[in-house]
Length: 129
Picture (cartoon, rainbow, N blue to C red):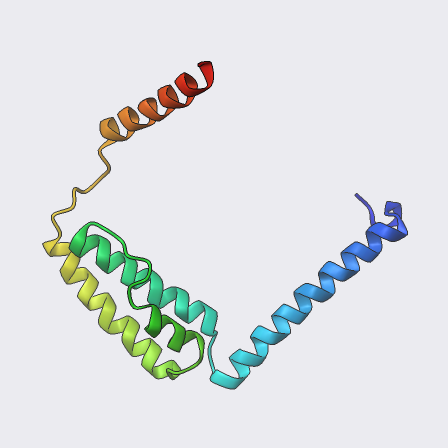
């Protein structure tokens, strides 16, 4: 759709969304300027690496595990150098955990298919009654 064809109301909506996005970006940019790195990206890095470790070592994921550390990352408690070192250390640990892991290389497709068929049957049996 061409901008010329939009109503004044539509243009005002787009202007509002644009300003909202720019405000969000500027806030994030301020944090990057203040701390020297993207805190939100860093907390995702910490969280995902924790989840990978949990899956490799236990076969399960506890999303609340290390929550306090993740809050510290998000609040700029760690320097960029500390975040970078954490990643390097964790990468080495995860390669070792991968080598020791008893998880199968791929998914059990038959078990997944059977589970999905069971869900579909439960769904349709529930609504046919």
